[in-house]
Structure formats: structure tokens, C-alpha cells
Image 1 (cartoon, rainbow, N blue to C red):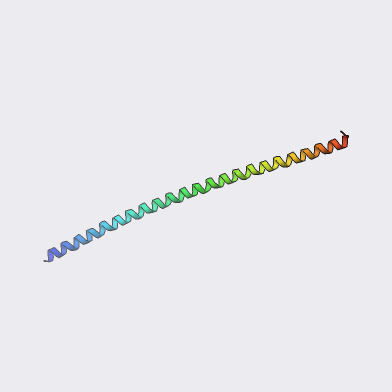
Image 2 (cartoon, rainbow, N blue to C red):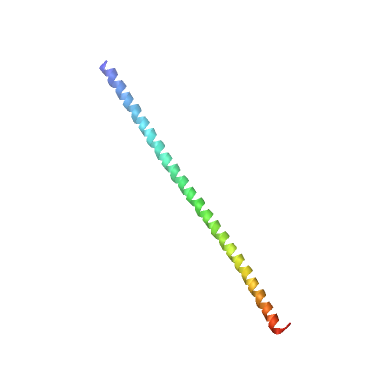
Length: 85
């Protein structure tokens, strides 16, 4: 009787340790997946910022070109007015 109880206790302990090991492995896997997801999110955010910066730079260059064209047109008109032709 005592041997059977000791056997069942040992069996329960072994099962508990196996379960704890499985839980630890799952926790490790979950942590790795979370780290990978965080990395991918950071990459996506950096890519979005780069696209936004490129778009802003393109828009600024376009506005500058328009401003320069208006300035050149005003200067040409003033030159024509001064020369009289």
C-alpha cells in the first residue's frame, strides 16, 4: 500500500515537472514571438516614417520649384516693363 502511494506521488510529481517544462517552453516561444512582432512593428514604423519624409521632401521641392517659377516670371515681367518691350 505504501509503495503504491509513493509510486503515485512520484508519478504526479513527474507529471507536474513535465507540465512545468512545457509551460516554460511555451512562455519562451511566446516571448520570442512577441520580440519578433515588436521588431517587425518597429521596421514598419521606420519604413512609414521614411516614406513620409520622402513625401514631405518631394512636396517641399515641388513648392520651391513653383515659388522659383513665380519669382522668375515676376522678374521677367519687371525687366520687360523697365525696358519697355
